[in-house]
Structure formats: structure tokens, C-alpha cells
Image 1 (cartoon, one colour):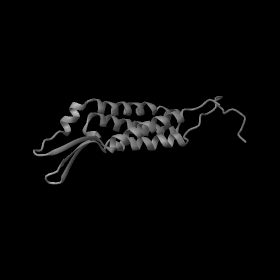
Image 2: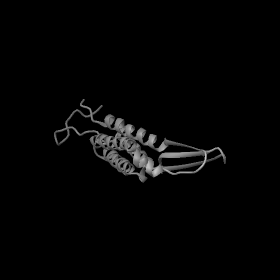
Image 3: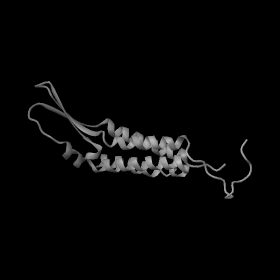
Image 4: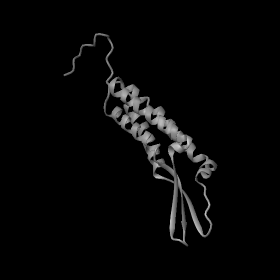
Length: 158
């Protein structure tokens, strides 16, 4: 049974840590790692040689990747503060999650620079197909997970 007497300071102490703060820390780390994965690429296939050439760019090769990396580190640090001190710190990780999601959207809205980075030409019968690769999707999933866990870490009034 919990002690019904108030603490010496007069105000009840908020709970530190909890599973959401641990989740924010881990997903923040995952978000930072996704900036190092391939986000977009071009695949060129030629029927003459029956060969395939793939060229891809990582998140940190593009400006948005650095924002995602920084947002992941910030979310991880806020989650760690939430584990050690107050859950409210982990709840503030919703801001880096939103910044990462916005940076990922901006990555898709600038096709000219993306095409310049990925563009190449080969003579002959050639099929070239651009694609968003797994790293971008992993970053989007991690940014959403950070935001959801940050909302779950928000302290509730009892």
C-alpha cells in the first residue's frame, strides 16, 4: 500500500522512466541510424549485356538526412532524460519526431536535386527506374514511432 502522506516538499513527485521513455530512447537511436541507410536510388537494366547497375544515396548525402540524424539524437537524449528524471522530457521527443517527418517529406518534394544526384547516362537499350529505398521508409516508421511513444510518455493526471 502506498504511503498516503505527502512528501516533504508538499507536491507529489512525478514518476520517472517507464516503458514509453525507454521506447523513445530506442526509437530515437533507430531514427539516427536510418540517416545512414540508402534513401533513394536508380536502377539501370540493359538487355544487351543482361546486367544491372544500381546507384543509391544515403540520407546523410542529402541535407534532410542530417536533420533526421539530429532529430534522432535529440529524441534519444530526451528519452534518456525521461528515464532518469521526469517522463515529461520523453514527451517532448514529439518535437524531434515531427522535425524528422517534415525533413523526410522535404526529401521527396525536391525531385530536381534528387535527379541531379542520381542521374547518369548509358548508351544503348536501357531501362532506368528511380525508387525510394528501404532507409527512407525505415526513417518514416521510426519518426512515427518516436512521436507515438512520446505521446504515451506524457504524464497523466490521476
